[in-house]
Image (cartoon, one colour):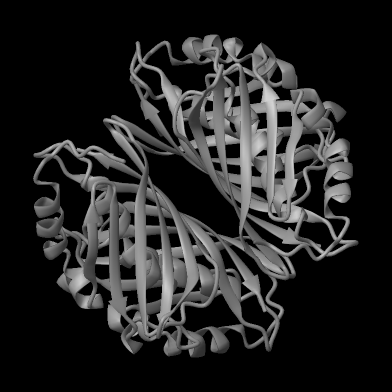
Length: 141
Length: 141
Length: 141
Length: 141
């Protein structure tokens, strides 16, 4: 649906993602990149848990924020960067899963501000459960 | 200002914090625990950076969320747990710093829901800069 | 998709809406009530404008908040009430329109907390433009 | 604390407020204007109530949003306008009161984006109760 302003959107998204050391630390991978849509997955690891053994909300927010940032970045003009201004996340259920995936989409792409939505799912075998939803604002620089 | 409902609030906060493996992974420490107020600090590490070498918004959110959770937990009754329902964070500046501190306070303590605010500062030498502000809702179970 | 817990959900939603004097003041009407989904529309009126002559963000938020509240209430048990805990709204474009419609849906329906999403559109003739998106948390009492 | 960029900040704030017909409809008044700080009050009226007879969350959000907008506008350069990008509000208690006041302050004033916080109090006689807290992002155009 979205028209990319940079024909090389996929390579700039992948190059920027590769520079996010936090994503490497989480073991996160880019699963899908299309104009306005990015999915990032990560395996469960006990290194990022909260007090009850589930993924910490900050880990859930990390992949949702990066997926949103790259969904926005996929629509940005060549030579710009995109930074998160703010986000709000609702934690719908404890973040249980063998792995997690954050699926982000652009809601509105202005010249200066881009609004994204992301859904995070916990995956056990072939079952996905909805663990979080994020609404965020990003700025193009 | 706040009256704790659990006289052992500090020990239950410290015990729960010690179980958050994500805090240990970030190198985070509890710096202050009083009724309704918790501070958590963490050193900068390249392991948690975004594409420009600053701390990732998800790392910033992680310490703000835990500080808020424990500020809320410090006011909860014995035998309960506190979980984040949702939070919203504004990223005020790139998260530059030799270390970071998240300072959380309870805004409203209901029987079921607790609302917290947290400020995150980046610290370089003796200078603190305001990098983020969070407003969150937590539930007592 | 959602199963109502109260077979009389539509009549309790309509009765509560009729008691919201703010909706009457805005000229708002319930357009759609089904389990987990409520639409509320309102005509443009200069009485609720901001400095540039568009609908004020508070008017936009008012119909989105009520639509979300009634989407949640449609799934609540008989004898309970639903109150908004918090909401976040992104204003995607100036609220231009001959009329507006807020379309709310439940994202998660817990026993205590319900999470909703709402989209607000400005309508001119047969054209709808997306003016706002809301993500909210409600409590069942 | 904040240095206004427009020496006529107060008159431009007052002129813009006077054009917000929604504020007149609510009976709202500008109570305080200083650089980065604006207070707006409004009387209770049954015209803006929800189902239980309290002020509707949308009315509460309306005065908090306008107060935040004018706190931001008080720091903007001459010849610009300020628009709300998004806001998040926590409703801390039912909006009871003979009148209400929203007190907004700028948290961060960038060239493009301004972040504000607002507190809304319900007033009965000489007693103020905290009914809502808002965190918002505005853009200078």
